[in-house]
Image 1 (cartoon, rainbow, N blue to C red):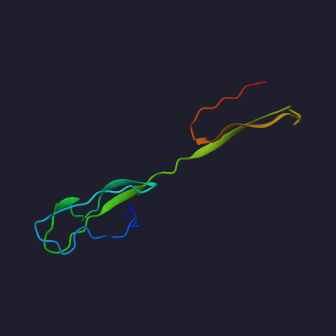
Image 2: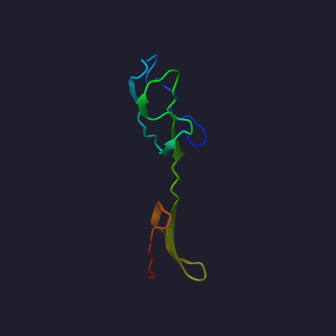
Image 3: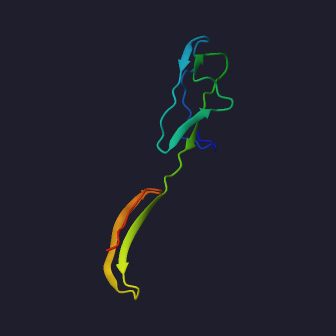
Length: 105
């Protein structure tokens, strides 16, 4: 599940009606756009032994921040607005903070 409780994958049985004392193992999974952050507050251990009743293993994921991107164009004009050279892409859809350069012509 996500931090806000959204289900990323439906609950599934690791062991059903297993013999008390037998081992079980679960693994965290990868989900696009999310990173594992912690085990749920009342989660059973990721690996352990079957006990009476039902154990729930809960992995909690955080949504990855979206990377901000931007573009830079250059255009050369006179102070009267006459276009000397039309728009040219300098950078297109690059991460915010990436260096760029233009030159006087």
